[in-house]
Image (cartoon, rainbow, N blue to C red; front, side, top):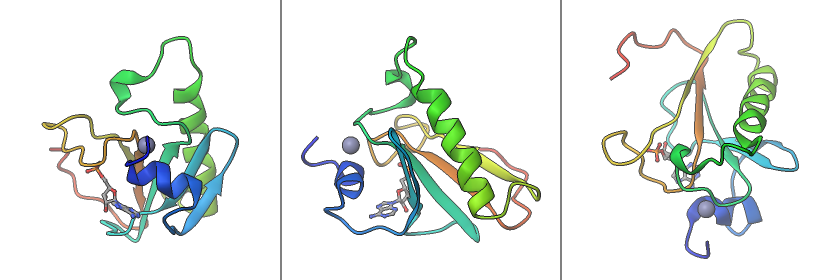
Length: 113
Ligand code: AMP
Ligand code: ZN
């Protein structure tokens, strides 16, 4: 997707603070952090929402494995963290390229929505 901001970040056309990268995933600091640790984990290929994940693809697992690695890199694997995936307009998804928010580094609010 030519216009997609996260595709541009994956390609390096827009700068980002990279945290982790492997064959299929890319992780970088959120530009407007909601917690001391706030990392976005995205597939390198353009996938719009969690509803577009193919059942026969291991991408969901790859994203969760990347999240584990990011948690260790950011040293929140023991203290804990929250993974959030917004989907569509009611879910508050602004960027239409699937991403996991990994939030931590403080005691997070109890409300989920
Ligand atoms: P969502 O509401 O789930 O679509 O979240 C999109 C997230 O992308 C927000 O937390 C933004 O702060 C973040 N974001 C948007 N542009 C950038 C960027 N260029 N670099 C890093 N994070 C970004
Ligand atoms: Zn994209």
